[in-house]
Length: 166
Image (tube, rainbow, N blue to C red; front, side):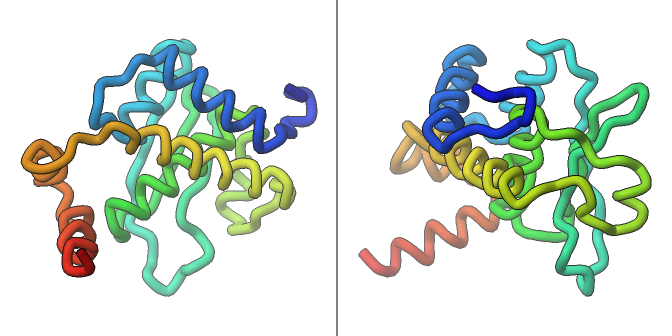
């Protein structure tokens, strides 16, 4: 893996996600917050995930990863669906885990994407897809699945929607 430039091939990303998930040994039904929280604890990172209410008119900003002297922060949009929040968290966590430089305070306040390249964005997006795929493997079916999703209304609505096509 080429950590110096933080460029990874899709195969390397898929293998990395698998390796980290095995190391963390998360229980069935774990979500992205569980994954990132445990990753941060195991790596000794001062990692915080913060949900913020972002203006509905701002469709450019869904989340970002930045670092301060004290914390690594992943900020994500609160006023969106649970499914979208997980995608945002997985994407921004991908930037952190893949070694992409965190956003600066100036870039965040200025609203600019600034330091991110298209290759980094694509890598973080692929990381998110692999992580979400991995976390949903082995999710229990039937009644257990309904119980696991009961506090996630958006996921339950999607379940009901897809059930109508069976």
